[in-house]
Amino acid sequence: MTTFEVKKRDGLARKGIFIHEGVRFDTPSVIEAETIFPALSECTSRNIPLSAGKDFTTMYEWCGEGQPVWVHPEGSCTPDHGDVVLVRNWHTASGNPRNYVNWLTALKSRIFPDTAWYAPAAALPSNVAILCYSGFDFLDFTGVDLCSVQGLFCMPEGNFSGDLIESGVCTCRGCEQGDLLTHNRMALLREVALVSKYISMGQLRELVESRCRLHSWQVAVIRHLDNNYPFIEKAVPVVRDSALGATTGETLNRVEVRRFAERVIGRYVPPESEVTVLLPCSAKKPYSLSQSHRRFAQVINGRALELIVTSPLGLVPRELENIYPAAHYDVPVTGYWDAEEKAFISSVLARYFERHTESRYIAHLEGGALDVVMMAAERTGTEVEVTCTGRPTSSESLQSLESALSGMRKVRQNLVRGTCSWQFNCVPDTKGMTIRGRYPEIAVMKNRTPLFTLDTGTGLLKPTFAGWEYISSGYRVYIDDFIPQGDILAPGVTGADPAVREGDEVLVIGPRALATGRASMNAEEMERSVRGVAVRVRKIKNVKMQ
Image 1 (tube, rainbow, N blue to C red):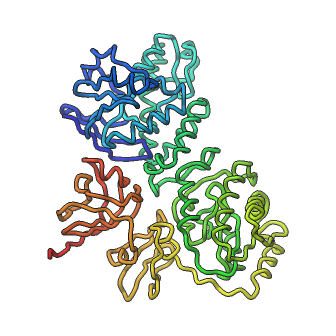
Image 2 (cartoon, rainbow, N blue to C red; image 1 turned 180 degrees about the vertical axis):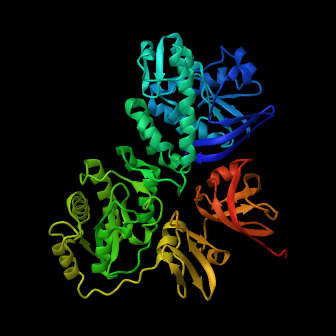
Image 3 (cartoon, rainbow, N blue to C red; image 1 turned 60 degrees about the vertical axis):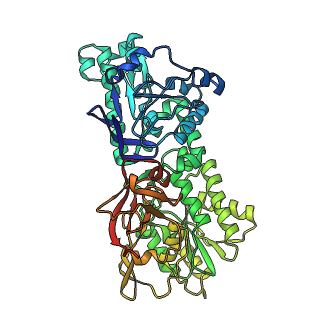
């Protein structure tokens, strides 16, 4: 009897609890596989190359006996919930990063999400991060033991000549004793522990990007995964508790960045305004807390829609500046924008200009930010006025902005309407709603009935049951005929809106109860898992039986 329950997700990476014949393993973990699964010792001739075609795989495929279940990208073996999935020959996948991602996508798409994944003979300290980032939970010592036999000294930076053990670069017990085997095993265990910590923090991507710089195949894997947006997007949460480290070129293609930009272009409904002012970002987040943006606000005085031009997100409407990752990214500020940044951000701006042609645009920008605006304007034929005569905060520039806005009427800002459009892809009727409290700790009311509160950590709206009545459709999770006594578990879910991602606010609907809370899984995982928390519930309301 085996069970596997995911406790923490970070994209495809997971921390979980695997139980096999009464023995518990916390994942990710390095195991002595043949000790745990004795049948593996009798399977030495069962391997099929990952590149083998369907006909060959069908002829020679073997699924194993008991645990683990052997799988192949072209195979038909069907692991059950809680099984260990063994991907034979995964140590060869690094030779072709494109196939690595294609094989991974094919396997992950057809196998239940509540299975534990094992990559035999693949793990080294230098690739543990990318393996776990790819969704593998179990690793073994085979790779580092082979390196020890070959006289190689293993580190996260790569494999080196064994005489490095005497150099002092490592002071582990193995190095102190001159024992290469012990050092290599300890280096692997240390890296797995570090990866586990980064998964807990929701920052494994940052670790992977730092580790992959010395290994080109790993960079290629990250890029191919990012380019497979429909697959990887489902696994990435909408919000995190941690900062997004925007420190490499790969950041521009991260799911969090692309998703934010896509929603600003495709979902966000700005308030009606005669003029839109494009402003520079600031190191301080949210931007409105910075000295520069306080000066901008004094001059604009509510007479324009404000859009912040920033790398890597592209555009951040003022109404959305608290939403993850707009208030949670950390980017090196140099004033230099490279060609890739300019191309990406100008494309976002161009799409915004094409969608909103009715506004008059003012660029209160300089340098690279102004360059991308003018690139987008030229591409779309949009007329843009420039009000900077030096730095945006200079007296001359601010006076120029003041003059450009002279006579403009104030814009009726609507935080609820703007945030709901981005968050729930709907535009609620906000007539009669009032905001109480001091921003950002606010509550939205109507006739003394609470409708929404603003989550100060994520910038998302948390609807009450009354608030959900203003969200016409979507972000619903359906459950069986029971009254929840706490969080909603995956076995109780009968269906979910496909748009639901981990971190989304959802309304839970059942024959006998309603509940509101935050999704802990994406919709597909809720529907295909038999273990784990699907929704963290805040409130439950019984529904009277008819």
